[in-house]
Image (cartoon, rainbow, N blue to C red; front, top):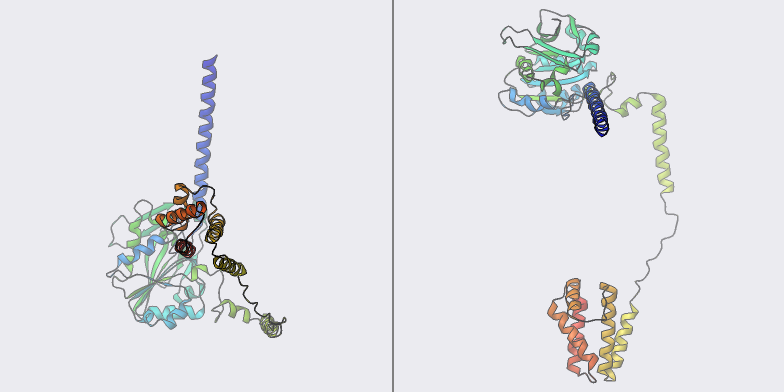
Length: 408
């Protein structure tokens, strides 16, 4: 009977353990799937959807290890203010889900490439105006949403045959359906041999566009041997670079900006009703500050510092006893005052003035043990003596005063 019960208990525990392991495995898969769906493309992000690996390894792909400059403003602003950006032999890297650019941004991007620079764009949805200016057309591919497999093939015949890189769990991208073949070169395709990575020649520079930004995320690059995909993808850029720029602006744009909208304030000021409301609010705030900022209550005069009359009373009492030459009584008063100070300051019991009391008081007050012992010996002497000399009382008084001044 006991053996059957043992078998039932062991079997039940085994089944519960298997259920727990299966549930934990399913939860881990769901958590990983949720993480893979979040693609921030942020250069600081170490999670699967970030670009930390690419950002850190990017300088090692070029002749001089140049640390990328992080850009947090629109391309037109940076191009206008940063003179080195248009100097030639620079690389501008932009990785994002969508690219919303103004007409000025697009014009400056094309001018930037004409001057001998390179623009690397890895986006799922490029800007429509930029595609129009480059003679490109893109088709949406919904199959990667369901199959969730990112594939990148490189078609350069000069490369080794191991130029196919796959990674399941993250979506692939769209593909190009039309291009100007006189200035466009196909560099890569998806798993259905549709072009998704091209190079467009502009002047003495070029623009590289990849419709598969998942291929540069941490999860893709760290999967098996996919880290080699990064060097092959950026091998189409110049080996010698003057500067490398990393864009952190467009990945956070959720709508297409109008011309001249460089801040949230300017967006609000475009609407007359909102503009009048803002100026009216500022005017009311100024009026409130002017009239309500005045002091309504008269100035309260400073109160004189309260003097410690108890000290004056003690001094007066001491002078009285000293004039009567009652040294023993005066010493007793000094002892009582000092012991009260010890009780209230250090919370010590003053009933037994022994060696333990001396050591504890020395430790709490910071006064040397010998000094405290001398004071205690004087206390015992005054308590037992009928008469106290002037010199002894004077020395005892000075030791007590030194204790008050030097205690912690």
